[in-house]
Amino acid sequence: MDARLLEKLNNFLALEKKLRGAADLQQIARIACNDSQSLLGFTACLFFSGSELKLIGGSNVTTIDATSSEAQHWRQLVRKHFPDAIQQGLAQLDIPLAAATGKDIQHQSLTLVPLGTGGAEGCLALLRTRSLSEQEQEIAREVAAAITQAILALRGTKQFTLRRWLRRRPLVIAAAIAAVCLLPVRQSVLAPATLAAIEPRIVSARTDGVIREIAIRPNASVTAGQLLFTLEDAEVTAEIDRVQQEISLYQERLRMTRQYNFQQASAGHKLAQAETDLSIRNLDLDFQKSQLDKTRIKAASDGVAIYTDPAEWIGRRIRAGEKVMEIVQPAARQIQIDLPTADAIALPENASTVFYAESDPLSPIEGQLHYHSLLTTEGENLPASYRLLASIQQDRPQVRINTRGHARIYGARVPLIYYLLRRPLAAARRWAGI
Image (cartoon, rainbow, N blue to C red; front, side):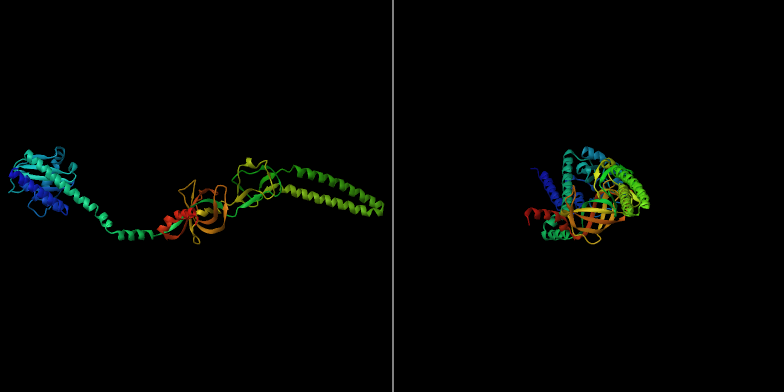
């Protein structure tokens, strides 16, 4: 092998070794600008970093003032021809001696060697008295590849330093995980809820019968004493007619008995019996009128009458005391929550809760728990649940009463690990039968 070629090979290997041992980008720039002189034969070398082409290094200098006029001159010149260098892989251009700002600079050729794909890592600018030959261009590309590899390796080392540091310290990781697991978080649970009325007035039938007519529409406003619905009263009306006819008959009998009593004093007992029979018939009439009054159900107070479709009630036989509708005050309402026993958590006194209506989930209603049932109930589509009631702290008038939704109930603070594993542990306990 030619001694000159062998010397260049040894110089290239030595350059690669120094680049691999570089600790930062500034050191890579100094090695590239000074130790590659024997390979590329330049009179001056400038190192531009990144796609913004920031001048950070030069040959035969320890520091670079990027704000100096000479540095700005070379940076503008490199930026002007850098796209050509990226497109061609390496660009060479002749520059006049007058372009140099120093009197002792005698170079006539500027070679731009991009670093990285598309010049993403920067550019190496070589100032020479003549252009590079084809063999020297190949050497310049190899030097650029070695510099790029050193930059990428340095960046990768910095990126994964923390990972290697954690890998060597398992106790630190375990302590950090334990600390995170012990972080206190606020326990909460989501349960079905309804915006219910406070103490609604139940409207029920006062006697057995069949509903003949409902005088109001659902959700209509009513006043005290207003007629709500009527039961069939044909039997009661017929009974009143019969009793009235009997009263007329007994009144006539009483009149005749009184006349007879004037004629014959011994008929006094018949007069007392006739008066008694008439009193019994009057009492019967009063009773039948009270029965007739019971077929006409009226509102006991002002409010809004709530019931289902009138077609479901008209013609339906109901028993005395059976609920037909209820009268509520729209402003007097509360949050009624059915908390499933499987989701039950320890709740402090006056626990906070937030109700989210299905019809308007973006208007939450805040409340405060004031009642917690100790007995469970089972609804039609609900599992065994505890009944909870919460007073409203911040109402939303646009959300109608009896609107369904979900309420989030906030409990005490517990460790994060308990918050995450409470449901899985409960499921595992039920599965294991413990």
